[in-house]
Amino acid sequence: MNVFIGVDDTDSTKGMCTTYLLTELIRELGYPVLLGYPRLVRLNPNIPWKTRGNGALSLSLPGDSSTAFKIGEVGGRDVFASFTPSQELPDTAALLESASSVVERLAVFEDENTNPAVVVSPSRPDAGFYWKAVRELVDRSEAKAELLKANGLYRTWKNGRGIVGATAAISWLAAEKTFEVITYRKKENWGTSRKVEASAVAELSAKFPSTFNNYDAVNRHSCILPSSPCPVLFGIRGTDPALLPEAMRYVGGEPIDRWLTFETNQGTDDHIVEPDRKPELFHSYLLRGTVSSTPRTLRGGHVFFSISTEFGSFTCAAFEETKEFRNVIKNLAPGDTIRAWGSLKPGPSVERFNLEKLEILSFGNRKIKISNPTCQSCGRKMKSAGRRSGYRCRTCHTKTAEPVYATAHPQIMKGLFAVAAGARRHLTRPPELMAGDNMSSPEPPS
Image (cartoon, rainbow, N blue to C red):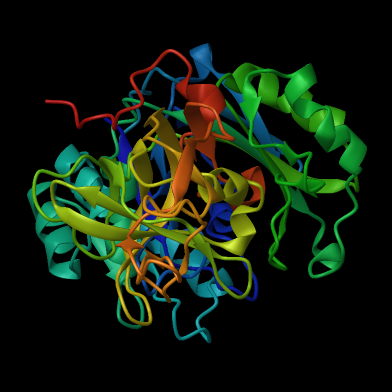
């Protein structure tokens, strides 16, 4: 018999990391072998009250030591996992007490947005709960109802909102997955500048092709480094967990305190749905439609345009932090047909569809003004009659609406484009992982 443990909402924008807390939980529980990899499960990235990356953690135990393999080092000891369960029967109540003590010692309770929860369950809640948590807004009562059906135990602190993530983390079936090896700093270095060679990070993708989102060469940004003062030194994501420890050693950098390999839903696009009804705020979608306005750049470098879909018109946004992705957006034109991945968020005046990726399917008829029209009566060039008033011949007083146009060629190519690597969401499937797939959202297993 195995037991699932889930934990969420223990970190803060000012420090701590729930993945680090999980390493402490592994150390304190003392089980020699986990059942499978520990899991880092990202949930709906549009939740207004999230702390940082909206990631929940889970693990299962015990595993069979006869088939164990190394997945990390914590507290000076190797951490092992096995895909074969042990015959040992864990005490769920005792596990809840141990996990609770770790949360009470490490969670950032002083942050108003930190509302921890721990879940211990002898069975996995229905996988549908994960799919709802990664795509929608879920109430705490729904999580409690799922745990009741699974005979799970839980403990919450403050408003207990973390029970949603903790329950979702253990209900994820990992039908589609990637991996991440995370290294942690020595405590005396927390909050100081991270010492990692950018040149080594820049070489990761070439040295280890199964890794992704490592380095943004255009903007010279090391994407594996967190931006917060948390205990993490760096995290390398990839599709082959066996190669991640080698990639970790290749990067090197300052001495590490511990490391652990996680199974994750990062890079899966699990948050994206193709809508069958009018899209809702705080949800992520794949929209298909036609560009209906010329892109415009506003103060700050943010670029906006409109797209017409079967569900109505939407204002699409590519913000400054998406970097060179905006150059693609600026070259779109009315009539272009596209597929757009992103999230519907409230804006100052209208709802905005914040872009993550965009695929150009076809181009509309582009045209460029080459001259004012010629008067058909006298052959003179006509003059503008004023804004949106067409053209007028000053001699004959004849009028026409349009100038002389010529066909213009697109300055961009058809294909898939994504925001700069440093601006990508954890869940967003990067282009290098989309080669060969149908670029649609994976569906929940039946």
